[in-house]
Image (cartoon, rainbow, N blue to C red; front, side):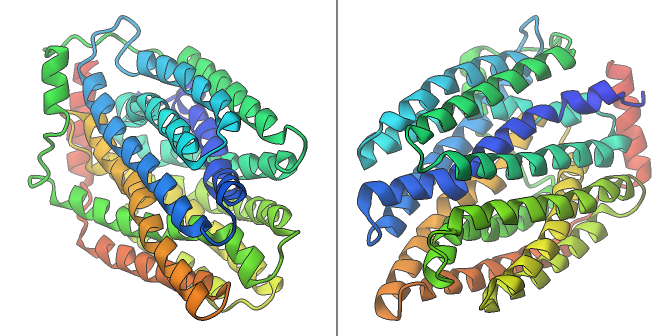
Length: 424
């Protein structure tokens, strides 16, 4: 059955709140808070530890609760109960965040936020394969991509306005709490789930089996994981250093927050221009080819970041990158849904999500020491230009991995769609 507008909104809107939150936290809030607590000299190493530990918690939590939700028999359905509970408990961590006055308390609060928000996110991200027929995955992913891009601009914009003002961090966390809970309630209202009627293991059986994920039968899915893993290594390397790159490499210390806001606005506009047609094209043509072209566009933009000496070049690079990444956002999700093993969608989406969260662990652990050594041994700010080069290497490796992916044919998709229809 063709999805309605309500269906597309229902599987997409919470992504706006998630992106609003993480876009601000990873790019501005966490780097700024770490620098306040430990100073400029130690910020790279401490930020690497905090983001890496938090991302490890996120990865483990997504798989665990995704697997549990696959066999949940709750009357509200498989995904919505976890979305509600996880979001509500995340709110507690948000209000504790401004009170963290040491690195250890900051780390503890960050772990709480990562855990409960991924209790919600692990099951939630399976709603596209749950609710949207195979032949419309590209369009659904484009909707999700637009919501994600809009969140990416809104979060950093709000953070740039509030951080540095009196009690600005508190008001920012309050805004995050309002957005996350409001969009959670909206998603719960829009999505209708039937209770799971299949065989349901005990809670202990679900937990113990959650990390047993056979990948050998799905080589294309594995190559997609490798590709996304490398590409997100590039993204989180840039996220790690973007604020410091503007402050210490290009010398825009006072203007850094406003510049990042401008970058987000520009990249969102160009990203939406790329996302909207990409979703429709992905439903008709090769997702693999479109994905590879988007990666080449982003690599071209990376050259601008690498060699930029003034803001004009950076703005051009941001605009080009936004277009490429908008296409990537839409088509990468659609291709993941195309290749997703059908027997446990949320568990495998949790594994696919590791390609996003694991780089949050590894990228800072690599980037932090590199930036620290180069900045100390060569000159402050040079280390962040080196990280831009490293990000391009990651992205190139991810682009190469795409060539080994074999997406499902139209016939295979038709069989899957018929099976889904029979299950309904």
